[in-house]
Amino acid sequence: MDNNAPQSVEELEERLSRPSERVVETLSRLPGDLIVLGVGGKMGPTLARMAKRALTETGPKRRVVAVSRFSESKLREQLEGWGIETVQGDLLDESFVESLPDVPNVVYMAGFKFGASENPSLTWAMNCLAPALVCQKFSSSRIAAFSTGNVYGMTSTAGKGSKESDELNPIGEYAMAALGRERIFEHFSRTQDTRTVLLRLNYACEMRYGVLVDLAQQVQDGQPIDVSMGYFNGIWQADANAMALQSLALATNPPQLINIVGPEQLSVKKVCETFGRHLNRSVSFVDIESEEALLSNGELGYQTLERPSVAADELIAWTADWIERGGPTLSKPTKFQSRDGRF
Image 1 (cartoon, rainbow, N blue to C red):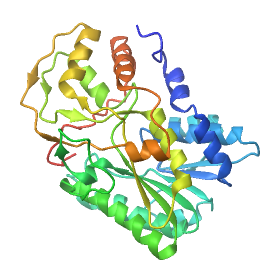
Image 2 (image 1 turned 90 degrees about the vertical axis):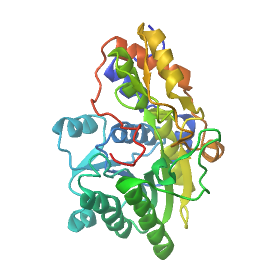
Image 3 (image 1 turned 120 degrees about the vertical axis):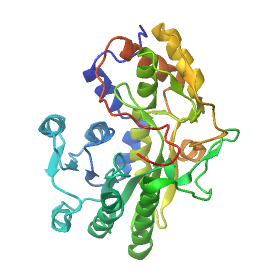
Image 4 (image 1 turned 45 degrees about the horizontal axis):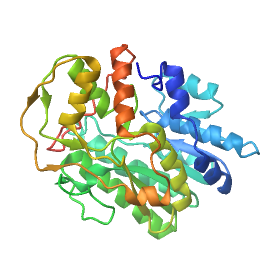
């Protein structure tokens, strides 16, 4: 057992939502309340809780408002138990968006990825129409909006990953719609002078979800590992949360672009071999590694925000410990191996 590994869901969520000193300092400089739109995803709950914990440390009572369809009532109850206000509704409903409280700090996390190929119209609506409604509502706010490294397309595994200034080459319906989302935020930033930062994430990892969980489960189950997507980026979700909240201070017109990724370029083969040693399993591989993969360069984020606090080796060990002990997972594969953009 890794003695530093999270041992329970409660401990895991506490650590995922623990604000760094720089998060507290940043939010102390940004007046007013904060709203998280699309809080119901994998990162949203702990990001909202981190924001609440940080704002509580800044002194005066400041609100964090979490918005979602809340198809699961348990999540709403959990957020409210953490002192976070909740609002239930659909971000595609213009009247609902207009009814949301006016706050100066917005974290936009809504989107549609899994099932995008089967339902392209909803993909474009969620990734482009909803942002337009939000931008019109929060024209005077600062907005940190999540995007994805998928907008870059593939890059050479011999390089250091795609930088924010690189040409974009989205592959597939989801990646194209994600670029559309970026363009919507850019349009309203330029026409309304809305301060915006766009966060290109890949991939947030915690013990219940992420690329590392996918690979650890395959190794534990004795499944052959597809290495055609031979490399990937991973970042501890708490570090991604912290960088996202800090990024609000960098929101500007036109939007600032920031990659949120771990510093290591991880080899699928080497990661799985490490899991094999941790889990006492033999590992087999299928296909061959491509010379290109979906990889991003995080240096700008490290310079302007902060470097991740948890290294990949530690994340791998924590994940192996969690999976070996039968810790709960979200049972939502990332499908990171997709090379044709179908999710």
